[in-house]
Length: 127
Image 1 (cartoon, rainbow, N blue to C red):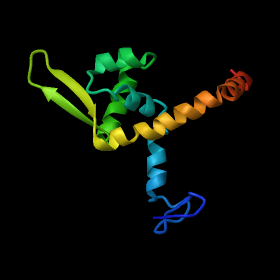
Image 2: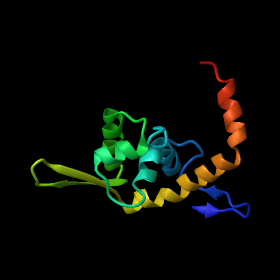
Image 3: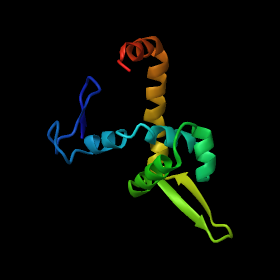
């Protein structure tokens, strides 16, 4: 990887749109609109699925479960099961998951700065 004087990053080993490019794989994680929301909700520490669902709001249990499984497979969260009756499960961000907080916050700052533009865009979308 090299950084040009403009601040742009060049991934020498990969073509600009190569399927195995790490940047392309990372952006694929954001194909789920809920992944950044779940990561942000877990920023302060481990949470149980029900607590996560209440914190996030508007996410169905199945969608949350699917996202948590995908995130676990990607190495973004750790699932901890406790041998209790009834069983207790908690999810916690890994180091890789915690590293996502910075770009997620950057997108949030950008969205806040351009809220008017984003609202206008959504107002123009057909129902």
